Structure formats: C-alpha cells, structure tokens
Image (cartoon, rainbow, N blue to C red; front, side):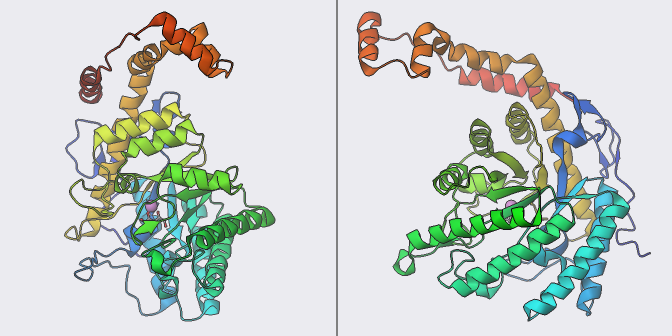
Length: 440
Ligand code: XUL
Ligand code: CO
C-alpha cells in the first residue's frame, strides 16, 4: 500500500526534555490529569478541509503546496488517495477524531446525482478506514457556502430553490455522519448574513434560518441520529454581517425559535477574536449558560482583521481555555478540532505534522496548568471571596427574588456608602504567570 508521508513515523511522547521536533513534549495520550486521560480530556480532531484540501491559495495567488495524494485525474481515484493519506496522517499523529464537510472528501460533479454517487463511495471508504484505524468522526458538516449557487446564502437565500439545495446537502451530510457514527453535526452559517440591507429582508431571512434548523432537527429524529447538533458563531466574513455573530447572539436566536434544547455551540477561537471577544469569553459565556458543545481550536493574528486560522500555540490562551472547559465539566460529545491551516510558505507535508504537534502540545500544557489551578483553587477562592456578600442573608434574599426596590432603599439608607474592594487584577495576572512557568 502507498505510504503518503514516508518520512514520518508514528509520533511518540518523549517528554519535556526531548529535542525531537517530531515528538510530543507534553501530550501524553494515556497520562492521567484530573481523573481522565489527556486523550479523553482533549479529544483532538484533525479537519479535512484545511489539512487535506487547503493548498495555500490566498486572494492574491494560487496554492503553493504540492501533495503526492492530490491531483489524480479520475475523481474517484483522487478522493480515494486523499482519504487514504488522511487516515495515514490521523494514525501517525495519534488523534482520535477527524471532521469534514460533505464536499471535502470528493470532487464535486456538475449534477447532484453524480455528486451523490461519488459521495456515497467516499463515505463507504471512510467507514472502512475508521474501522481499520479506530479513528472516529467528531462531527460532520455541510459546505453550503463555496459553490456560486450559495452566493446569497443557503437557508437565508432569497430563493427557496437554493434553500432546498442546501437542505438536500444537509440531509446527505447528516445521513453520512450518522452512518459514520459521528459524535456531532455542525452548522456554520457560511453566507447566512448580508452585505447590504438595500437588498435584504432580514426578518424573513432569519425566520427561514430557524425553519431550516427545525427541519434538520426533525430529520435527525427521523433517521435516529443521536449526535449533538452545534452552531458555530462568526461575526463577519464572508458576509459583512453574519447572523450567527457570537455565542450570545446564537443563544438568543435559539431561545427565540424554540431550538435551545437541540443545539449547543461550537466555539471557534479566531471567530471569537473577530467578534472582539477573547476566546475564553466565548467559552465562559457557553459554560455559564450550559451550551458549550465543542471547540474549533485555532488563533487569529491581533494585527490582522480576518480569519487567519493559525494553529494554536499560545500556551496562556490554551490554559485559560482549558480552565473554562474543565470548570464547565469538560467535553462530552465535543472536542478540540484544529480548524487551522498552514501558512502559505510552509509547503512541505512534514509541516502538517509540526503544526499539529505544536498545537496538541500547547493544549496539553494548557490542560496541565488548568488542572493545577483548579486543584489549588486559588483563583476560585479569590472569586468566591469577591462575591461573598451574596452569601449573606441579604444577598440571598435578592438572589431568590424575595427582595424589592423598597428593601434596597432601606438597606442603602441604613448602610450608607458601600465599602470598596480591590479587584487585584495585577496580582492575579502574576499568579497566572507563576502557574504557566511552573508547570512542565
Ligand atoms: C469557517 C469555519 C468553517 C467551519 C465549518 O470560518 O470555521 O470551516 O468550522 O464549516
Ligand atoms: Co470553524
């Protein structure tokens, strides 16, 4: 059988002292941290679209990367070689999961019927390779944004014919996800938004989005798919105003439309920063509201205003993310999917390994730091003390809804000017640094 990454052996854990760039220094899949193995906590997934279909093209020029598994003239052969390369990569890297969009795993044909045939073949091969390798599907999704037919959106398109086409794709992709025993299914509103209100009926478009999601929930029940449904927020790009702006916007939309029991959020780090939130803000919002599902792990560039989808390497950001995720109870169906791509000059296949190894190590270190912070509970204790006033009788009466504005008035009259307390931000930032540098 052809080997697509012949220069690379299975990536091993060699520990923090190792100088081998093709080894893990921190990610030790079977090592236990806070009661679970690292593999169970982190649930890493490789994404198919960037890692196998992305070749370095940008707005100013074509792809720069060459891959032995890309470019066969016959569409079935091209799809097969790429998928065999993908499973070789997953196995050598040692990730438990992968993620894909329907059209990532095939070359799309001119007719839906022929695309469906190619897709069914690719899904059958994926099923076989999953069984052979033990790699599982974290989530599947639909690409209803690249093809020109979706230029004005999918479910929010002014045309019901395009809405129907997107529905046909979701049906096909959800059924494939079910066949592959996927743990979840993602909706990212690729072009569900608008560029100008001069041509847009916002009310109608967002109502159609809700209708579409209800259809998806009904289909999920009909076929008996048990995976978790997720929505992945993003504030803009490709459209100027995306409807799924951030977690709070999506949450309100789900509540308004009776969909809150059926969906959780897939938080993407770079989408958070595009919305001018820190990644951890989005995670904390989801934890606080019981809607954290899964994570697209990547990072943006603070000097660039678009979705750069870089691999996450900032240990501090990973530690804060894991601190929020662990305090939220950890992942159940979700995981950390590397929705990230190589820089255009990183042209060699081995760069794919360097990128994923670094990202997995950054999250493994983040996990260790977060677990230690939770175990010592210094921050938790500080926050509890800061809110201790709410644990008095007076605080409890407010929280339980018994107290009135008249009671507030009487309290303020009696107690006068409230005592102030320092937020101690600098001290806490220093403390965080102590953890980041102390934990190996
Ligand atoms: C685009 C993006 C998508 C989704 C899946 O910004 O993040 O790849 O994760 O459609
Ligand atoms: Co994403």
